[in-house]
Structure formats: structure tokens, C-alpha cells
Image (spheres, rainbow, N blue to C red):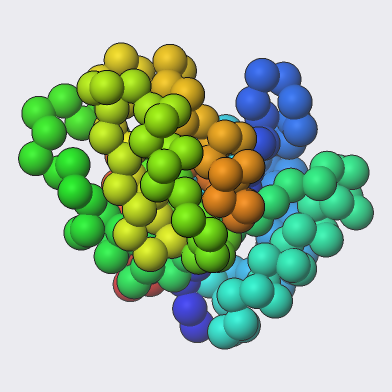
Length: 181
């Protein structure tokens, strides 16, 4: 059995796409997933499955949420190894104030050039690095003030994405390792 981390985009944000975590956990359990665990109210679900095709899992979860709750919610699924690699490759791991570090997880690799547009949009004190399917953001004025929002990055890169802060990303990895053992 494989342990996966499912990241739902736009769940329980500003009163939109409201789904109770108990209902989401039940939906996953009814989908023949095991050891289903949620973390905070923003659509983080860790679970086990025998399915090995990530795209098939993403589509299955997308369809189940659409059918049950009526929400069109992008789903990004990571393996423990992918999440660990994202944490290990964090170029801002030496920043003293880690609360300003965010990870934007991409559904697919971007296929277009984006550097010029992004560099023109970011604030002078912000940093951004894209490594594989993870965008690393350092926003010392806070993520709420950056122009490098999830919506903006999706528009520029033409790829679905969802963003988590460093603390949440680490906790998801910790929970996934516990479930995996």
C-alpha cells in the first residue's frame, strides 16, 4: 500500500467551497482509501491506497468531490518521496524567519517561459525559485501581500497549483511518515 498526500485547492477559503473535514474523510474512506487523516481545514488529506496511477487518483477524488459536494476542486497528489524532495530542495531553508516561506505545488510541469513575467510582478525583497513541480516563495512582507498568488502563478504557468506554508508542508510530511510506518 502506498501513502499519498492529497492537496485540494480552494477548500474552506473565505467561506467558499466549505467542506467539513469529517465529511471529506468519510468520502475518502468510502472510496476504498485507508488510514485517512486530514490536517487543518484547508484540504490536506493523507491516505493509503493500492492505486499507483497518480492521475487516476486525482481524477477519482476530483469526481467524488464534484458529485458529493458540487465543487470543482483541483486535486494535486504527492507521494511521500515527492514531498520529501520538495522539502529537501527548499532553497530558502536557511532563512531565519521560515514563516515567510511557502511551497506552491504544481499539478504538472510548466511548459512555457515564465521568468520575465514573474520577475516583473514580484516585489524587490521577494524571492521565487521553481524546481520541478514545486515553486518556492520567500515573501518577507507576508504571503497575503505578495502579487505572486496562486491565481497569478496558475495564469502565467497555465498549470493548476495549490500553496502551503512551510510549517504545514513539514507537518504533512510528518503525518505521512507516521501513516507509512
